Every structure is written in C-alpha cells, then in structure tokens.
Length: 459
Ligand SMILES: *Cc1c(COP(=O)(O)O)cnc(C)c1O
Image (cartoon, rainbow, N blue to C red; front, side, top):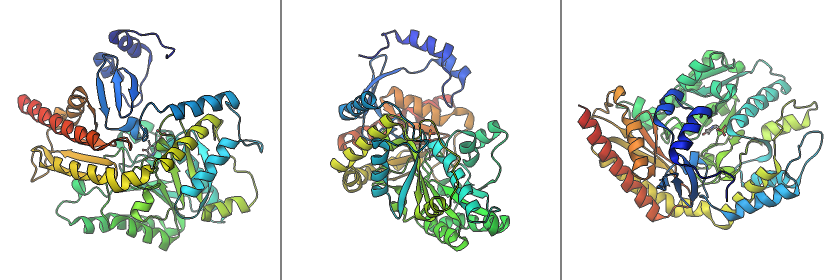
C-alpha cells in the first residue's frame, strides 16, 4: 500500500489549497473550487478520491505512453534503487544504466546521433541545448552566431531559458527578463492564421518567415532554429506538408543548426521513434523527455548529432554544464526498460499501422459536431476547434470560457481532455485499443453536446 493514509476528498482538498502551489494554476481560483484528487491508475484509466474512473485522454501530460500500473517498470526501479540508487557522472565516473540507455537511444534515433546528454526534464534538456549551441559556435570560431530563432506559441519548458525560448505570451510577461539572443517568428497554425490560403501555400509562407528573420538579423549572427515538429501545448498545431521541407532547405542554405524539440513527438507518439522521421526533418540536435520513461520517473536529455558532437568532443576544454541528476541510475533503468518494452511489444508498429489510423478516422468525424470548426490529428495527438460559427471560424465570447467549460464537463463525463483556449486536445496512451478510442470519441462528442447546451443556456 501507499504511505499516505486515506482521507475524505474535502480533507485532501483543504490541505491541498493550504500548502501545495500547483504548476500553471490560478491559486485563488483553485482554493475556491478544490482540486480533483487522483489516487490511483490502471491501464488507460485514472481513479479519483470519490471512486470515479476517468479515461486518460492525455496520457498524464503526454507521457504515460505505456499506460499505468506496469509492474515490470516498478520492479526495475525497485531493484535499481537497491543496487545503486544514486551516483553522479561527474569527475569521470559512470554507471551501467546510463551507459546502456545512451547506447539504446543512439540506436533508435534517426540520422547520425551517437551521443546523448541526460537531464531531469524537458525544460532542462532545452537549457542544455542552448548551452550546446553556443559552445558549438564558439568552438567553431564564430562566436557572433548567438541568436536562436524559435516560434510564437511554442512550448519549450518553464525554466527561464525554456520560457524565453518558448513563445507563450503570458509566460514572457511574467518572466520579465527573458534570456537574450532569442527571436521569434510566427507559427504554422492554419486554422487560426491561414484565412483563405490553401494549407500548402500557407505552409510555405510561414516557413519563409524563417528566411526573412535570418536576413533581418544577419545570417552570420544566427546560431539555430528551434521548434517542435508538432506544437503540443500550443494546441496540437500540425504544420502543412510544405512547411518542414522548406524549413529544412532554409536551415541548410544558411548553415544554421536545427533543433527538434521532440519532448512530446518522440517514442511512438507519431508512429515513429522520433517525430522528425514522420516529417522528414534532419535535425542536428533533439530534445526528449516525457515518453522516454513513460512518465514513471523523471528523465530528459539532448541527443547530439555528429555535426555538433564532432566539434565538442574533438576540441579540448571542459563543457562547464551538468545537473546532479544527469543520468540518474533509477530513472535511466526505468527508461531503458520502457523503451525495451516498446520494442518487445511492437508499440511503434501498432501505433503506425493500427491504432493511429483508427484514431485519426474516428477523431475526424468530430468535425461534424455543430460547435466544431476543425478536427485534426496526426499519429496519436488530436485537436478540435470550438467555434460559434463553423463557416466563419468565429469563436464564442472569451468570457464564456468555452474551452475550460468543455474540459470540466468532459472530466465530469469520464474523459480527460485538455483545453488550450477554445482548442480541445488529446494525446492518449499508446497502449489504448479500438474500444478505448471509441469511448474517447463518444465521450468527447457528449462533452461537446453538453458544452453547446451550457453555452446556449447562458445566452
Ligand atoms: C513538456 C514539454 C517541455 C518541458 O518538459 P518538462 O519535463 O515539463 O520540463 C519542453 N518541450 C516540449 C515540447 C514539451 O511538451
């Protein structure tokens, strides 16, 4: 059993509001409403303290790809904690779990990646990337190449560097003094910004913003372009097919490093080991976290391709960067077991050939709902756009909070969906079956019915 005594829901809520500051939460609002207390989980379902079973359409936070309750992963952690719970990799020390995981990641990664730097999270992975990028250009004798271009509405984590790199307005406002040397271009969000443009034309147009920005800053000053293959937290924004090939052309032409933030898109989420493979992207650096350990223990990292690795390993001098928990033995052992389970259970093939096509077809039908302006998905991520008017894409009044209303009604109805403004998003566990997908789509439709009724009642 767990070490926490059983309490009534309202006791948990009261203690929670008194002491626990939650991430990305309006503390005042939470104190009034009380949080939902999740007590256990099994397979693709979570259970709350009132005994309700809820289908987890978000796989935790895009991470529990293998589902909950895997004894094999728990036992690997237990055995590793007994054998060697902790040792650092500073001062020329190492240990088997980190070495074996680095070797497996090198094998699974696309292109020419032979090196990995471990971190505790995705945010830290992106901090590490900034350090690697600046180190690389310094060693290359081009220290003036320091500017990194990223995108508006991108999410690259919540440390100060992650928030600076990301393009989230509220995070920038609250961070105040963001990290210098980062510029942003607009995103390939067709539903919001594409107007009447054909998606392929729009994709080219948004990709060429990168070239314009490089020319504006001066090509000799630009170090890297940093992007998620599919923007996740920004609202599952899937770029048109023309976008990534044009971005790749521009990066190649100006010789700038291309960083793929694959914290969500790696490890089967798009039906490949890495989402870059789906889009034909050839990144120089890849950030990962979340699904690498299926969320059972925290782990992230930076995969370093040959171009950068050759320079930072060949030229002498210490890389003055690292974390106490870089390559934590138990986290690495669990990630190794999770990735091997994905291999042994053919999860990538299952997602690519069976689950994702089924999910994509069923999800697309949500576009028929009267308050849905678009339903889109790729691999096992999906989004639906709540609108007042399908033909003009006009939104409901912002004060009505259509998205959060739908999210709350959805969870009450037994499905975790997440709201990003009035965009509803899902990222189900990769071990779901067709029955789970049917349940997810049916419940999503019912939540939309209830949302529509509740919005109508307000008018
Ligand atoms: C979640 C996420 C991060 C941040 O990872 P943390 O582990 O929360 O620090 C970075 N990039 C992307 C694309 C993410 O989705």
